[in-house]
Each structure stands twice: as structure tokens, then as C-alpha cells.
Length: 168
Image 1 (cartoon, rainbow, N blue to C red):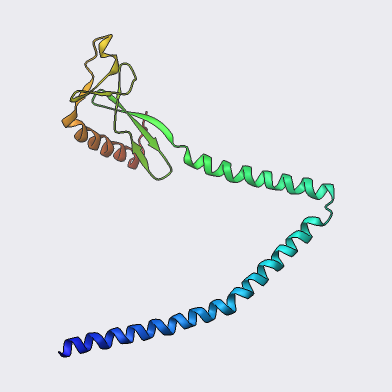
Image 2 (image 1 turned 90 degrees about the horizontal axis):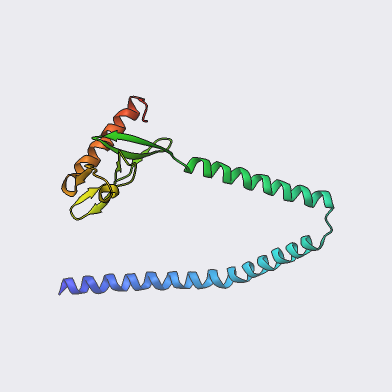
């Protein structure tokens, strides 16, 4: 029985704490809501007054030019940092596309045929060159070995970047 009494006591204390917080929340809302409405109305009146004042032509042109230059600078900075350098890394008679950003790099999972410079396609259980139907091309990777090749290429590219060797 003492366990049930303890649980009931804890439930009563939780309910009383919730009730006291509910009253505080209601009091804050009753006092704060009119203040927020008054502030919003004053801000709207100020905005309407500012919109109705006359603006000189040179001020309007300067504002438009300033906003245009700021927008151009922001977009130029973000777009220049997003575009990675794309290079190709040769490994086991295949070309792997490497995208290099400032501090990181990304190797595409599917390699390119070194002879035809076309990305491999998955055919049956292998990655093969799409030119195999028209010409005899021996390039390809068995699907089971693809992950091993990919991990080896990633580590080789990382080593070249760390040693500051040139990736073609």
C-alpha cells in the first residue's frame, strides 16, 4: 500500500504544479496580448506614414542601386563557393569523376570508360561501357567488386590531395 500512496502523492503534486503554471500562462496572455496588439498597430501606422512621405528621385535611384549591388554580391559569393572543380582521376583503366570543393572532395560512384569517355551503365550484374554494342570495349566492373574499387579510388584521391599532387 505505501507504493500506491506514494504514486498518488506524486500525481497530486504534479497536478498542482500544472495548475499553478496554467494560471500564470493565462495571466501573461491577458496582459501581453493587448500590448502586442497595440505595438503591431503602432508599427503599421508608422509604416503607412513612411510610405506616404515624398521621396526624392535620387534617393529612390540610390536605394534601388544599393539593393541591386548587395544582391549581386551575395549571390556571386554563394554561387562561386558552391561550384566545385571537376577533375578526372584514372584508376585501373577507368576514369573517376572527382568534384573538389575547398576542404572536401567527392568521387562519383560510377566510373567512366577511359576509351569512350562515357559513364558506365549497369547491365545485368556488371557496370559496362555503353559503347559495347557498337564496338568491342573490354571496360567494365563486376557489380560485386564495385565497392572495393570505389573505396580504393577514394583513398587514392585523398592521398593525392594530401600530398598536393596534381589530379588530371
